Image 1 (cartoon, helix red, strand yellow):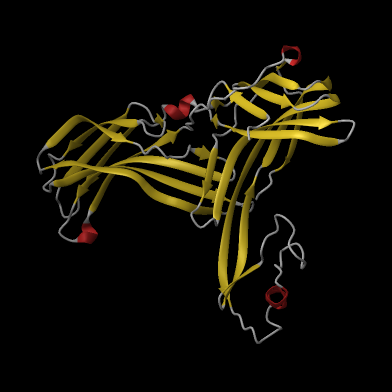
Image 2 (cartoon, helix red, strand yellow):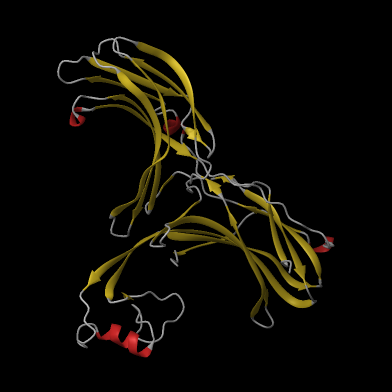
Length: 378
C-alpha cells in the first residue's frame, strides 16, 4: 500500500546553516470542511550506555530482592517507574538470566531538542493530490547527522534531524494523517580547523646509540567522505640510523566517546578502521616525498563533537623499527586528525497515479515558531 504523504528533498545532505529545500506530496482521501496542515523540523541528540553488574541472588531468600521475586511469580516486569505491569518505554531495574541476576545501570547524555513549526494551510480542502514546497532553515552550529548502536544494543547514540507533516481535523480535534522523514546534515568545518594540521613531522632518537629516524607526512586535505582515497605524501630519513625500518604502516583510527549528564566520558570504540603496510628501507637510506593512496571504508560514520558524543578520526603514519628485544621497539609515529562527512544517496519519489491539484500549492519560506524540549531517549 502506497503512502499518502511523500517527501522529496533537493539535496541528500544539507550543510549546516543552509536551507533544507524540497516538497511534500499529500493525498487527501475525502473532502474536509476544516483542517490544519503543519510541518515541523525537530532535532534529537542523546547517548545511552547500559551496564549490567551481577549481584548475589538466592531464590530461597524472599527478602533478598522482593521485587524480582514478584516478577518471576507474577510474570510482570518491575521497572524504575512502577511495580506494576510495564507501560510503554519503561526500563528494567534487574535482569534474570538463568540463575544469574544482574542489576541494570543506565547512563544518559541528553541535549535540548529544538523544534521548528510552520502552519502550511488552515481551511477547507477537497479530496485530491496536493504538493507543498518547503524551505527549512538550519543553524550554523548544528552537528552532522550521526547514529550508532552496538551489536548487543547496550550502547546507543544519535544526533538526528526529522521533518513531520501532520494534518489535523480542527472540528473533530484529531490527527487525520501524519508522516515523518529523516533529513541529513553536515556540520560546518571551520577553515581554521581545516588548515590547522595537514602536516606531521617527528624526529626520534633511537636508544642504545643507534642514531635517529626522521619521518614527515603531508595530506592535501583532512576533510573526506566515506570511500574517498587519502593522498599521502611522506618522507623518511634513515641516514642517521644504524637500524633498518622494517615497514611503513599507515592507518586510520576511529575513537567514539559517549558523555553522560555527569560529564563522565566512556570510550565506546577505539579501533583501526583501515590500515596498510608500505615498504621500509635499510639503515643509511632515505625516501623523499613519496606519494601513496589509502582508501577509506564506505561505511564510516560522520565526525562529531558535541556535549554528548565525540566521534573522531586520526590518520597515523608509523615507521616500524624493530629492536632485538620487543620492549625496546621504537614507535616513530606522525598523527593528523581528519574529518569525515555525512554521505547519503538522494532518494527519488514515485508519483505514478498521482494527479496534483494546483489550487492548494503552498510555498513555505520560514518557520515562525521555535520551541525547545528535552530529548526523548528510547
